[in-house]
Length: 246
Image (cartoon, rainbow, N blue to C red; front, side):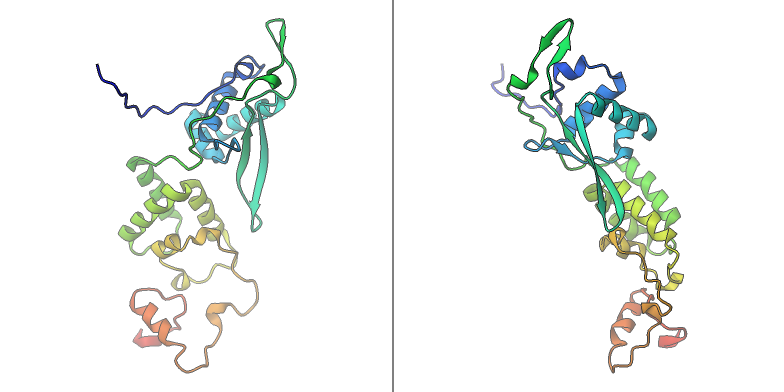
């Protein structure tokens, strides 16, 4: 008989008062997944709605309804997050202890007096994506990106980005980028790998002024040297028509 046990099982704990609360089975599943991602100390997590829908195998709308159920019974709190005018994934706080006494089976229990259960799944970071998921989401990225250069290096950069930040963050940022009404001409758009490696999904919208940065003249001697260096590696967002013999 071995004296040690090795296991890769991950789990989350659901308090009995949540199990017996007047919510749907799907709401219980959403609670379980949120608890799975919650921080040990703050009990906060910020998985995206898309990630929750994938883990629950349901639509995003169904997740929204389940979240509303959990908020109604006081099982979670939800706070919207905004950065640079763009909505990010919401911040959820999982409640281990009921805010008020709960009646279960005709018996009133004050779970506020109970000792909180220690949460042992410190996994606020995103789960690693498998190869099939990455390929599927990369194909979406590649179809959307307005400049298609260096597909191989872009695929590597995309895998690194989604494993760190999540595919929803990257793709949502790309959609904002593509929908920007002031998007520059294609030759001035960074290569896909450059866009990913520089985390450009968090960039501010392009300026609206009549004279865009890529249209401004550089009059200082030597200031075009860096443009030629970028041109030589395939980046042309600052090149002028006919410059450098092309």
